[in-house]
Length: 228
Image (cartoon, rainbow, N blue to C red; front, top):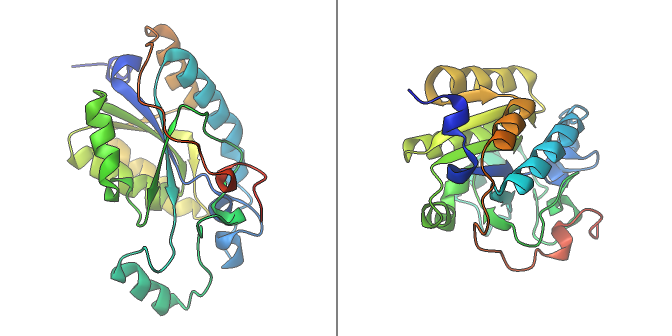
């Protein structure tokens, strides 16, 4: 049986960074505006930045998922739920401050996929991209642990990818649900790891040159400090 280090070897792995956007993480964003506590989410920024640095040095492709939940984009089921909870604000409206990155940001050669529901695989380009470049294992970081991170991870598992969640580089405004996701992943789906453990695995593995195709220029509104 393969070890965690073998499953997450740099030459077969991609790092998936989920929804690190102001509307999910920042004071004044959408989640804060609906009365949820976002004060703890910034704590994952330092370990995530360390993980990003190690991934880039090891040649592990970094893939970014971003949400855009404008009503013209999301499925009817999400619109119905918005009506049930009385939501009126738009989460991660394209081009807004809320859609911008929080605490981390892509480099010019890293791919960004926009999604309109909770799973990143709702954008079919994500799986095509991973298959094209021979990625068999996915390491997940970002927010919210129990919503978009878990939704994407579960679907990745169902599609045959090895999956791991970085417990100190994922976060949620809901602590109980965050812990439940970690328990579910460890029990049924894949590996629960620390950022330090992943960094050590990638430091020991061979660096990969080349890698995944560069994405077109990241929109300015998604970069830290974009117009609010």
